[in-house]
Each structure stands twice: as structure tokens, then as C-alpha cells.
Length: 174
View 1 (cartoon, one colour):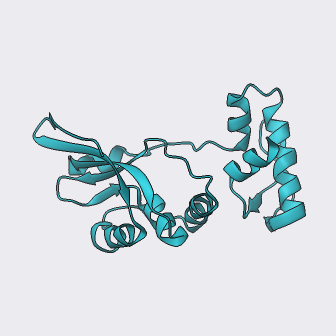
View 2 (cartoon, helix red, strand yellow):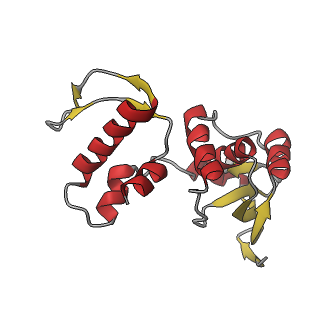
View 3 (cartoon, helix red, strand yellow):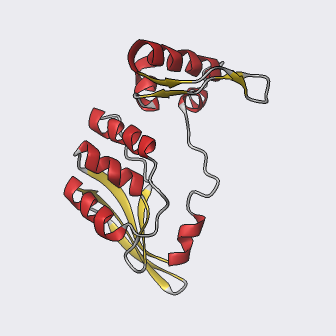
């Protein structure tokens, strides 16, 4: 694959695109994942489902390692990979300042199904996503449901957790 080294301050950063096997992912989690936040099991399951079902897409999000070799970004993807048993292509960045872990994913908002529809230019993307999410939860995989409540913006929301990923529901719509 492709690799490149460059200097940033006192650090030599190594960047490459390469495949990682489930065994290598497991080894990284076991030996180099010592500084990350607590893992979110629901997020891991959703990612693993995408990987197992073939809806996972390479998007350039890197696995990041600091100058000490510690994993500072990518634990959820690697844990999901182990769960899925799939070999995955990653952008791998190593040699980062150990302090940069404090700036990764701060106040990040993930994209959801309505965001995907909005990016496609679909009118009423929020309503369409709500219908599809409700269809999936009632037809296939209702995990939990809470009564509707006002979200403060004059819209009623319900908490529904689905076993299917946003990508699967997106693909289903198209």
C-alpha cells in the first residue's frame, strides 16, 4: 500500500493505507488500547453489523497511534472488526503527539439516517428517516421503545434502538 513520513513539530508522523486482519485488530486492542474512553457496546455492534453485512465503506477515517505506539483513535472500529471477523482497509497514522488524544472527537456529532437523506437532497429528510426507522423497529428488530416526548423544538421524539444500522436502512430505502 501507500505510505508517507513527515515531520510535525518534534514528531515524525507515519501515514499509510493498509489492511488489518481481525487477529491484528484483536492484538492492537489487547496491547495498545490503554488510553481511550470507555467503549460504547451499541456503537461497536452497529459497526460490526455494517462490516459483516458488507455495508462498511472505507472513508479515510484513520486509526491513530501516538509516538509511544498507543492507540488513540479507532478502538470502536477495531473492536467491531474483531466481532465481524472481516479484514478491513484503514488509513493508519502513527507517531502523533500523545496529547492530541484530548482533541479527537471532542463535541463530535455522528451522522444519522436523516442526515444521509438530507445530503441526498431529499425533501423532508427528517420525516422520511422517522418513517423508515419506525418501520424497521416495528417490523423487524424492536429492541427498546420509550414514549414520545417533546424535544424542546416543538417536535415529538421517541427513543428507538434498532439492530439494523443507518446504512442498512438507507440501502433498504434505495
